[in-house]
Length: 199
Image 1 (cartoon, rainbow, N blue to C red):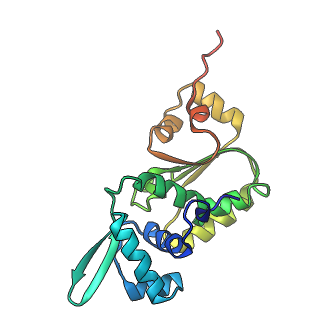
Image 2 (image 1 turned 120 degrees about the vertical axis):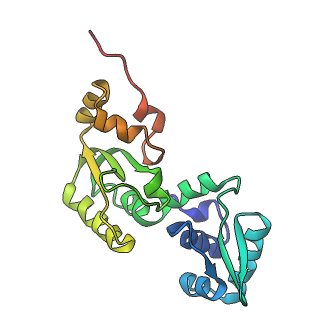
């Protein structure tokens, strides 16, 4: 199964990115990051220096502490965010348990959900299309809800229902598909393609 370490060779950097993207607006000092990653302090410092040089993170001094935080202006920020969403947390669990979850065609996270941003209570976080084993999915979602501290809104449709609603331009589905997204499973272009309705 694909993993962040396929792209990033430093295991310390992989762990740091996971911490940063779990709370993209958060700020941490070195000892906090050392505890969260369970790595040696010198290894964490070295990697933070490299990430600073590459402009992946920024640093701010407050009192006698240096705080590190993600740089949203980093050239590859959106790509990194997508990689982290797919290979950690609930994205990782869905991919790992794909066979147990049934026959899945598409899994899409909304951009806000992938970025750990606040959203309106009625906004959908996850769209899943296929013949899904709902109790298996519910167990994965519950685990993620405990970590995030809020209820996750997810919508499940069979492929036939999804295609029917898409052809009929169903406002609920179109509202989800118009949102910024991260594809966890399936091809985005294929999911969004609208085949002409046969008269």
